[in-house]
Length: 172
Image (cartoon, rainbow, N blue to C red; front, side, top):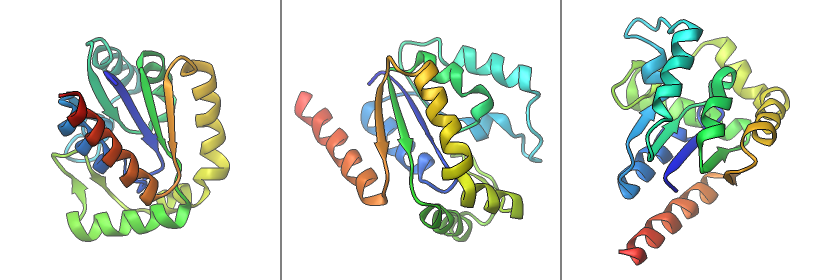
């Protein structure tokens, strides 16, 4: 697990899982929202964002967290492990609400981009019917060489994280 891409719906827990894995595996971590948006929530132009991701996947070891389907293929082609958080919409909506209560909105240094809009809520609610098929297609086209881990509940995420930490400790 030297090059890990963590993907999934907003509110699924990508940032939390990535923070934990990066710490336990001593991997350099990039939160895509933190590099995509500036402090006034202005996005990078698409060509700059893609060029940045090409640079981010060059090193031997990394963990990159974030969806951004328009450029996901860049990460999938370079990843050795892809972790897809495929949680139910209601779980993701609760995750977004919890994040809002914890972070109080805005862009945060840890990569959390906490901005709730009706379009974001609709995106989360429809993720499994509209976005998941696109992600699955991208995984099949660009990530079939990588180890794919699909986690469908908070419990499964916590169990996976516990196993990863235990396996790492057993190797050292």
